[in-house]
Every structure is written in C-alpha cells, then in structure tokens.
Image 1: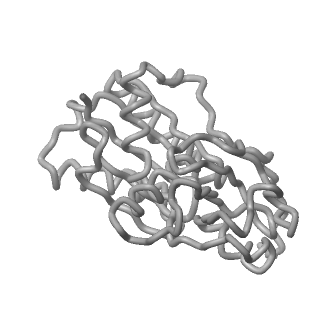
Image 2 (image 1 turned 45 degrees about the vertical axis):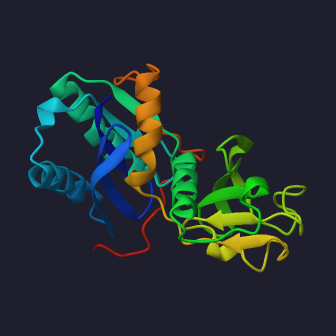
Length: 236
C-alpha cells in the first residue's frame, strides 16, 4: 500500500490531504484566493502534524479538473515540483469523480438519506460562470452514466436522466444555481464541495494499477479555453 499526497485546487477551495492506503490521515483546506501560498503551507503542516517524512511519499495525486484555469495550474505546478524533487510519479484524478466519491462516503456515514440509493444518480457540478457548469453523471457504484462536459443549464439538461421516480443528486459549487431551472421532481441538492479527501481512494487505486501520468507533459483538463480579458480599471 502507499503514502500519497493529494492536492485539489480547481475551485476557490485549496485542499490538501495526506492519504495512507487510500484513506485520508490528515486534511487541510480553505476557501479563498491564496492557493499559491496555501498549497505549500498546508503540505508542510500535514507532515508536521503526522510526523511523517515527505521522503516517504510514494506518489503525488492532483485533481485534474475541470475547474478554474489558475487554480488547476497552481496545484499541478506544485505537484510536478514535488514529483521531480522526490523522484516519484504523478497521479491525475478526475475532480468530478472525486466529488462523487465524497457523496458516496457521506451516504455511507449516514450524513444524508436517500429513498432508493441503488437507483439514484450523482451529478457533481463545478461552476463555469453564468448558467454553465462542468458536470458529469455517475450511478452510486461510480459507473459513468454521462461523461464530463461543459453544460449550459436549461430545463432540458440531463434529459432522460432526471425522472420523478429516481433521485438525481446535484452537488458542488455550481449546483445551487441549477435549482429552479432543472425539473424539480427528483432533483436533490447535497452539501458536497471539491476536496482532496475525495482523491484519496481513487489515487490509491490508480497508483496500484500503474495508472500514472507523464510528469513533464501532463496538463489539467480545462474543458474551455482560457480567455484573457482587458481590465476595466485605469492604472494611470
């Protein structure tokens, strides 16, 4: 089994977890705009708190997105730097699937109830501005029902998947704005946000299967092109 540092910075939450054998042993996270500083500070705090040595790491895992261009770049750059310095591999975990893992773990822990968990669908959403979200749909065994995509939310979104006789759980920082737009029957909002906690199990599975990425050439999944806009502020 393995010791893996897990990093998720694709939204306004900077989250870092230390995972042993697929389970988080320590976690640090905070919302804000200080990802470039916090990711290093949180990592140092995790090792100091646990008494573990960074040189004992077997791999570094990073949330591959989709998400914020800047946030993903910060997390990926930091993860690559550690991999190069320690001579260990990089694992890239789908950020939406990691959120679905958290939803499953919360259900197993009794943090919310479902009328029929076996038939329910999980739809993690990351805000992509206006009425667009990055989303995917999974069943409760984490089988992909609808792949990751940038979705303009309308009343027809996820047609055929939202039904009155089946719970369709939406969660993530893009989910709340879809309420009132998506059909009300069957749609339920969960309080689940992106977190490195969700990477732990998936990172362990991928690492054990040898599913690592090329550290030099890996790029996060942005889904949309990064657009540079001209500031409206007058500097002079």
